[in-house]
Length: 212
Image 1 (cartoon, rainbow, N blue to C red):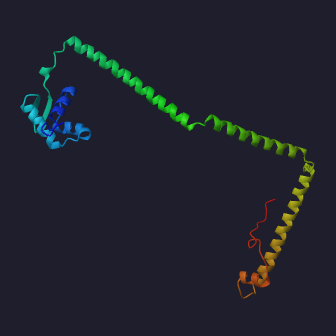
Image 2 (image 1 turned 30 degrees about the vertical axis):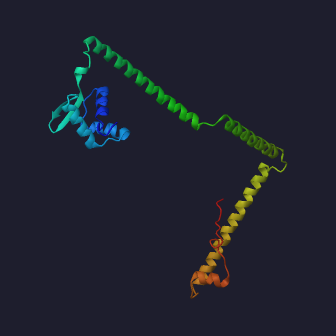
Image 3 (image 1 turned 90 degrees about the horizontal axis):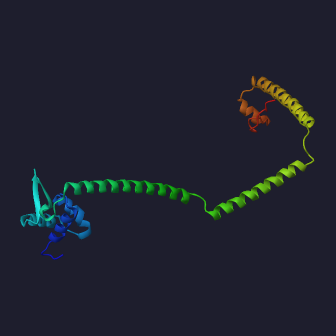
């Protein structure tokens, strides 16, 4: 494209190819990135093409619209127009179907990409087998153990726990009563008294009487 041409031939070819109305701004936006045309150059070129009769110009309010000279194109019959309409409908339906197929394939591809590979699945299966083998060995060891606690022994332990907990509560209550009796004539606080005599409470040791 020569400097003298200033993009006119390119714009003329573009309008003839697209054969639809454009403003100068539309042509500038469509061709600027690929061909590096400036807006002022586009406006001047389109005005010149219109002045030379190579393209047509229409003014709508403050905006000018440019389009290819329709005289250069052969007349199209109604039958041809209907045939083109049918072709457009068929191509549109085909494009829609292809777009749907592409979306479906994209979904399947994402699922495949997120799935484990054959090697990864084999490795995971082997790991699970090893874990199962370990669990079986532990189970057999438990079953073969000779130190199982019998129901009678378990009942005995529960009864002993009940006795010890009851005694714990009793002694705790007696100790609390004695301490409270002493504190009635003691000039300091309860904490100071316990520190002085070296008594540690259940709370100091962070233990609690279990429920029976």
